[in-house]
Length: 312
Ligand SMILES: [Zn+2]
Image 1 (spheres, protein in one colour):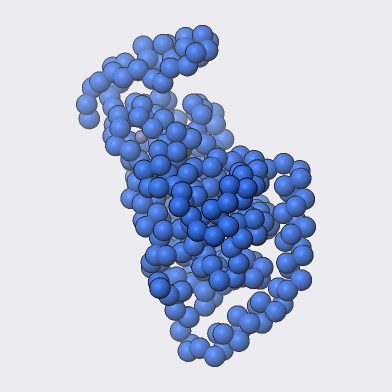
Image 2 (tube, protein in one colour):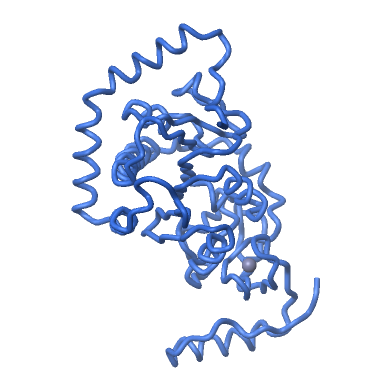
């Protein structure tokens, strides 16, 4: 712990300026903590109960502008808790993500030969749906044995994967610098991920998800831009789904028109939803052929899961 005072990011809006001055005065002698993403000085912005029993401080980093909880000592309990209510939205979100991703891959001109990894894929439903769309998706999850994509699991992913997806992962990372680097090490041309961007929200922000205690890091757009830039990527922000695109990406992703179209898809809206649904439904005509082909592969191979895609 160190005691320092660092001014918060300034704005030209007089109301915002006044708010920042007030916050500076409030916290100028508060202890600082090292940001778990960039190592910068983070200051406590507010405290609030997590899991309805732990009083947790939320820290804003003055360097990258992200928000983070105290080092999350409660995660074991958070993940061990039996959910009284099932995740009723899971199936709908997975369908939405699959429709969205199938359209993005079509725009990027990435076909069945591009190896794709769903990082933190959970039960594997998304992976299976993408395989049914004709894409070479594999599932990786440190904590969950997938139900839907047996045989298409990668225990220890190694580079390269042309595409990485990580939905509902970023905000759960207790040590984001390390974990995000390990995904960049897979050298994807395109990385699509979800998270809500932090914009100086307060303790009443729903996305803190304090009742279940599993959201522990909240990224500013500036933090993600900086992360991408240092690793040779461009950060393309969306509503809740964003992209890292390799600056020197191959194939379709080289085309400025493709990048612009992906940016447009990430912005969402009614037309994008319709286009994604139409594209998905059209490709789904061949789902039977794809899962039949996967069944044949599994029968021909040994009982053990197939090996992950070659690194060559
Ligand atoms: Zn930071």
